[in-house]
Image 1 (cartoon, rainbow, N blue to C red):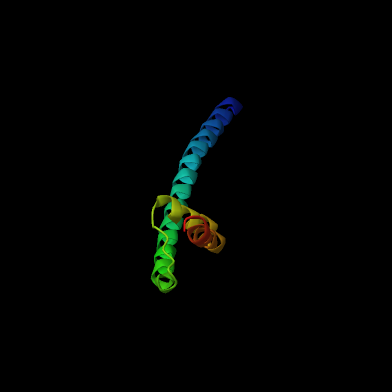
Image 2 (image 1 turned 90 degrees about the vertical axis):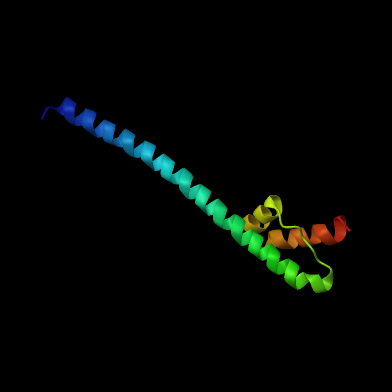
Amino acid sequence: MEPKVVIIVLSALIAVLLVVGARLKALRFIGHAAIRLIVGALALFAINAIGGQFSIHIPINLITSLVCGFLGLPGAAALIVIDQYILS
């Protein structure tokens, strides 16, 4: 084979892999975000179930679930502090 043909084929293959890889990374990011959203909602549900005895109620919506899901325990603590001291 001529070197030009090999270079063209390799360039095309690299371009295809870059396009496919970019799409897979975007789908992977969306999947991770959805999992964190669900985990955050479940954590807020548990906080509301246990915190009902201590008059702690955090509404479960998109923003609070994302805060709790992405920030974890510090995010949940921040939501509780905001609920107790700022909103009450």
